[in-house]
Picture 1 (cartoon, helix red, strand yellow):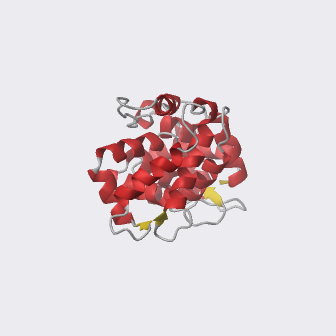
Picture 2 (picture 1 turned 45 degrees about the vertical axis):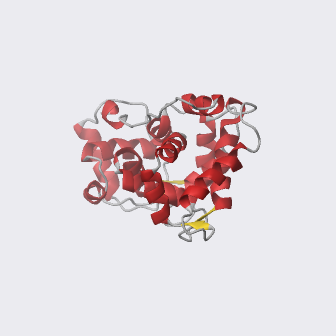
Picture 3 (picture 1 turned 90 degrees about the vertical axis):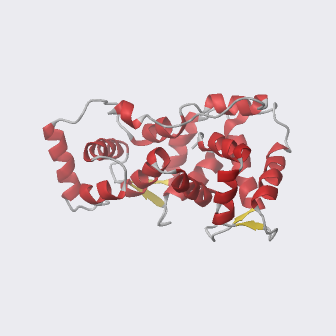
Length: 249
């Protein structure tokens, strides 16, 4: 089961990259799977026993003062996880988050453990907002597995939609140059000593200028989701860059 959940494409070409990008890539090998699973999953890799499965199902069905997740059947239909996988995910989530939800401060605290050499707080804030789809200030089990399903097993289109939502900080349906700069700067801040001083201070803005020139086809100062997806799918260099940044999620 653990191996099945660990299958994530984190490949990207290293040819022609700067030392800073290589360092960024090497330090993010664990990528989406290991980090998000570490946030919430318990350490057990064994399949849950029949008794444990029943207990999990009972918890999912009980109505209490805590957050009540949707039924397993509904989540199974809405995600690409099997029933057993959802049971393991839920057991770990409840182990780390007994209340059934995680707030932003806790999310930042846990996420920062993966990047002790830098400041991950700003990027963790953006990432938290991307998972908090109903914008209520907390990430529920449903929010978690819906996002994880896309990141681990979604189509290219679904992953790009998710990435667009991450970059669209104010959720108005457009990405501005400043929004893109904020995200990319937060990634470099998070990598800390691993990136600096190899990369110059103006490097993030230079990357944004290149991306924006290619994405903003009608030169109206914003990037729509159609422009974003079309450009990413048709420009190999941007796609590689997107994959590189995706690995630090």
